[in-house]
Amino acid sequence: MKTDIQIAQEARLKPIVEVAKSLGIGEDELELFGKYKAKISDEYLEKISANPDGKLILVTAINPTPAGEGKTTTSVGLGQALGKLGKKAVIALREPSLGPCFGVKGGAAGGGFAQVVPMEDLNLHFTGDFHAITSANNLLAAILDNHIQQGNELGIDTRQVVWKRCLDMNDRVLRNVVVGLGAKADGTVREDHFVITVASEIMAVLCLAGDMRDLKERLGRMVVAYNFQGEPVTAADLNAVGAMAALLKDAMKPNLIQTLEHTPALVHGGPFANIAHGCNSLRATKAALKMADYVVTEAGFGADLGAEKFFDIKCRIGGLRPDAVVLVATIRALKYNGGVPKAELNQENLTALKAGIVNLEKHMENLQKYGVPVVVTLNSFVTDTEEEVAYVKQFCESRSCAFALSQVWEKGGEGGIALANAVLDTLEKKESRFQVLYEDTLSLEEKIERIAGEIYGAEGVNYSAQAKAQLQRLEKLGFGKLPVCMAKTQYSLSDNPDLLGRPRNFRIDIREAYVSAGAGFVVVLTGAVMTMPGLPKKPAAFSIDVKEDGVITGLF
Image (tube, rainbow, N blue to C red):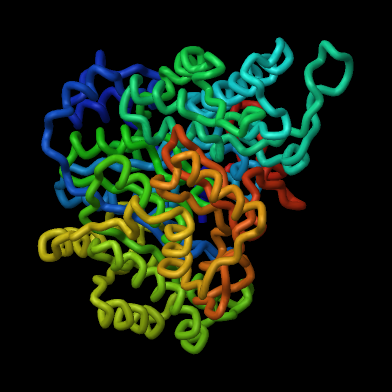
């Protein structure tokens, strides 16, 4: 069987100008990055702003496992299948981060015959958006430390600097560092920290900003430190906004590429909902809704993270009203949740399937709390048996969720026809009554406890003394009306990655909270989750290489 990168490299791509024409986008409304990538101009986005919105379909998944789920693969395959049925469809996806591409998995463009291409470009530098975010983030850090060095007119307490530097690579040794060592001219000695670029507040700001004016306002509101009186100091106070906006000017524009079957795909912003907002940009999603009758989008990791943030943050801030949600699972992943080791997942095991399906059940219940019709799809493997598939189908339909088998990895759009028809049928017959999980008026602790109880299934919440004090401070400073962005392991509904299935009788541990005032939410760190990941013992980078003719290998 061919690898994902082999399939992608053998594909016949259309020039992106031709793909754009299918949406009515002229060449002069594109900013080209070679033959197969382009950014969409602000002028075009303004031109289509009065168009009616298409139907918005969110793709999410059960908690990820080593057995694989295939959320992006399903998103791409569903978009392709809608195209095969003669529907005008656009896909809106998150960009991959270099950290995991070279760390744990080697790529994030879908898989098999359901990929977005050019795959290598997307998984590497793409159009440079993440580099722009990294530069803007670190420019602000440099201006902050320079301000302290040059007299500290704002009275910044160096023990209360909250802005962190960033890098788009997994590098655990940068989590906690000391800066300013050396001579007096080398700066003020203080503790500092790095996050991975996708966890930078600037990523969330870019993804949630409506236009350049909104971007600059959000950048200006970002809290970088506190002064000796305990008052917040912002990026606007440091006079850093204009320069950061200049670095982000082009990164604001959505990127247009294509699938293997030439379905248009807007890939812009994101990606990790376990440590950040985790959704593609509002600009990309809203543009897609104006371009097409059906928009397939996705949010990061399992529904407890990505879907929750998509609904409670992105839809709340952007005024989106999703029409349906597709929940992706695999027989293999469900059996893994039921206690089967990875090496034995190819064997039929209905007992384990019944034990592990409770993870799927909880995600179905969670999604239904938002009032959006749910379609469950099984990403098909050749080792799945008829009995196993029949059990999952009956389980879903008995709980008022449509069900469809997906074979998009193997067959591309053709393998997604059943899923596309199930989605279309759901859109026709079931009305979305979308609602957010909690009101703005609740306190921060009430919002945290609502998510922990309703979405994770926790009995309660334990706050560290530090987190308690931070939340009280944020309330006093006027940030209590903001939604909360929970940073939690993606591998479990709890904050313990080893608790699979549907954990019960547990509490969520909150260790830290801080405001992302520009993005417009409060970040809450649970358990041992890290905003700067590390590399595994054998990083995916070990398998990546370039041949003499320039062909990249090992980026799967």
